[in-house]
Length: 403
Image (cartoon, rainbow, N blue to C red; front, side, top):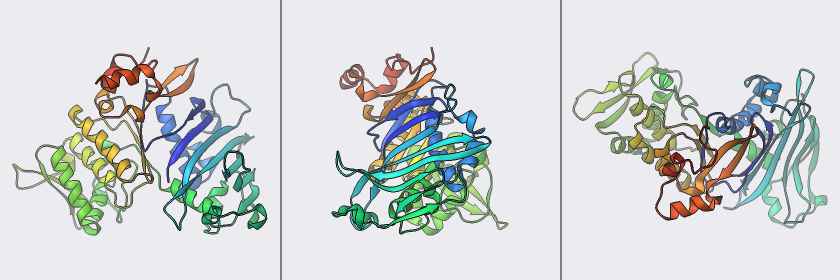
């Protein structure tokens, strides 16, 4: 299941943008303030809406009026995604559209309209799996597989539903029930997105608490996640350690070390020493590279990884390796996983194919997004052997550098 396109209106700097034909590995560049972090935040916002409600998701970001674009007073905030959903019985998928609009009503946040639909051919009338306005609407209670057959509207089981509050997503409520198959699949997809902003200070903490089956957003449970991999997925953990040894000179062994009081330390052993150094004593780049490799080798992979500026604290020569790891993650799970990355690193960009690069720029205060492969001049330079990062440094991504 993959995100194929994104349309956004009135979400912070993204007043009116659309990205189509998004590849498995997509990299976003641009000057500070052009909206890269905002674009990544969209996915965290939708996930927060499902986890809690729309009001809570907006409050985390300063409230509805802080999120709505300047000059858009009285207008709704729209997020629309085109996503491949799977048939459960066969290895194929179908493109559906999920659209949600938010408004304010005094101090309240309202889900103004929420639609999940699939269109039959170029001109056919769409099936609306979900169609809700302000907390009330209808939903199709059918297996998604049924739509591979010649099904008519009259054959469908349609249920009318009402939500408890106007700031709840219908997707949150209906997605709990397998009879609403399309809603259930989409809810599962969004809940399993990972929007990572790995923080060095969090990586260095002694992990405590229960087992961690995924790396957290900030990476503060990296030792617990390493312990989980070592205990339950020994082959995966061995692959992570091998990849680490190949990419960081001197690191021969990585060991999660339970202390006996509920904490787990992470030890990195250099081949020149008999004992490993705990994570607080190794370089920022060493522990951060390990965290990324562990994330990318998760045995239960996230369908979408959103990662901001992975180059921070990493040596420039590791940038091409890291870019290749991200691309490999999307490639080996083709059709099932994506990676979205923001970066300011030309070295990272040099290892990224032109088809995967998008650049953001401001025009009259509004964000515009352009795919690098659509620029004839950039295509010609890359065909002659130039690297995207070099071209970016030379200012050939118009508007992508600070004025």
